[in-house]
Structures are given as structure tokens and as C-alpha cells.
Image (tube, rainbow, N blue to C red; front, top):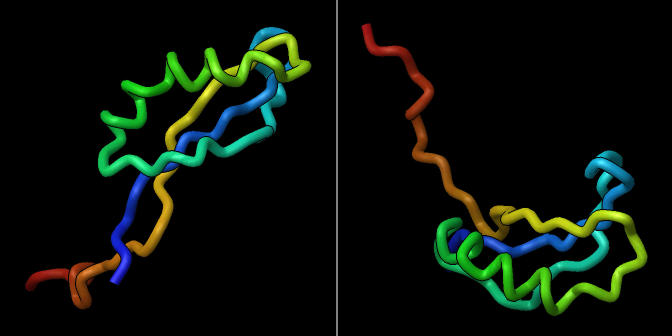
Length: 76
């Protein structure tokens, strides 16, 4: 079974980082959000060819996510 992982979205934004839209998804998968965030500077440097006033990145969880059955039940 596949587990959850993080991907990095490269986003193009208007002035003042408003109205951002995903332009690319980096091909790498990261096991933790911390690993993804640590790779942001290099990813932004690789994606400096986008034609937007502001280019940013965001780590997003992807893959299979499981919830334990009964975890939402109130104890009484």
C-alpha cells in the first residue's frame, strides 16, 4: 500500500503574492513536510523562468491517507 508523501507546488503569483496559481509540481516526493520545506530554496532557483511577478512554493500532502475507524466517536 502506498503511503502519504509531500510534493512541492511551484506557484506563479500576481504582485504582492496575490492570486497565486500552481504552475508546476516538482518531481521529487518528500517523506516529511520538513524535508519538503528544506528543499524549497533550490526548487525556486530551478524554476526562475516562470513569467510572474512573484514565484513561490508550497508543500502539499499527497498519496493515500488513512483514518482510523471510530476515531471520531465521543467517549462517554
